[in-house]
Image (cartoon, rainbow, N blue to C red):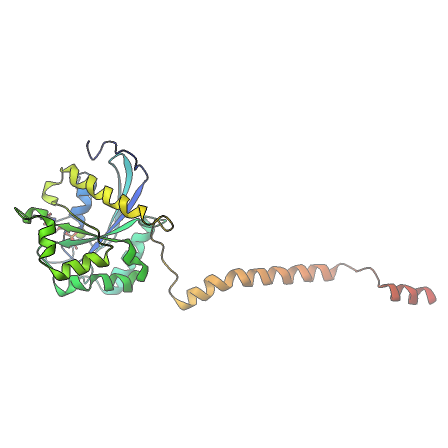
Length: 253
Ligand SMILES: Nc1nc2c(ncn2[C@@H]2O[C@H](COP(=O)(O)OP(=O)(O)OP(=O)(O)O)[C@@H](O)[C@H]2O)c(=O)[nH]1
Ligand SMILES: [Mg+2]
C-alpha cells in the first residue's frame, strides 16, 4: 500500500501542526508527510528559516491531510510574542483546530531548551496543549544499527519528554522523503491517539485573558437583559385596559 493510496478504515481528514525548536527539521518533516514535495522551505541555516506559519494540504494515504509549519520556539530571530502570534495563527490556519501537535525533536540533540519546550508551549497556548502533543523525531538516519527504543532507553530526559506527550512518538528520516511507510505509520499512531480522545478530538484554544472571559461570558447575559428591557418598554407604550376600580370610578362620574 502506498502513502498516497488508500488506507483501510481511517479516512477522516487530519490536521497536524509542526512545532519544536529552530532548525530541528520541522519543515522537512512537513515535506515528508506531504509526500516528499518541497512544500515548505527547508535548509541548513544558522538563523530561523521559517518565520511565519504556513499551511499546506494534500491527499495522503487516501485522506485529506492539512499540515501547518511554524517558526521555531526559543527562536534567535523572533521574539517570544511573535512566535506566540504565529502559533495562534497556525491554529486558525487549520480551523477548527489541530488533531495533534507534532513536537519535532532532532535525534542526538537534547539540550536544556528541548527539556523546557513543553512548558514553553503550555505558556503560549494553554496547559491543555499537552494532551495533543506527540513527539516526532527527525534524523532517523542517525540511528544506524540502533533502534529508536534503544535510543530512548538510554536517555531519562527523553523518556520524561515522551511521557509528557502521552507516551507517543515516531521517527522520520527526512532524507528518505519518498519512504511512504514512515508516513503511514505516523498517521496510524495519530489515529490511535484520536481513539483515546473521543470527546475532544481536536485542540480548541481556551479563553485565557480575563477581559476576554468577561466579554465572552457576560455578552449573552447582557444581550438577554437588553432584549427584555426593550420588550418591557414596547409593552408599556401600548395603552392598557383600565383597571376594574377605575372603570367604576369613571362610571360614577
Ligand atoms: N540527515 C538528515 N537531515 C535532516 C533531517 N531532517 C531535517 N534535516 C536537515 O536539517 C536542516 C534543517 O531542516 P529544516 O526543515 O529547515 O528545519 P526547521 O526546523 O524547519 O528549521 P527552522 O524553520 O529554521 O526553524 C536541513 O538541512 C534539513 O535537510 C533528517 O531526518 N535527516
Ligand atoms: Mg522551517
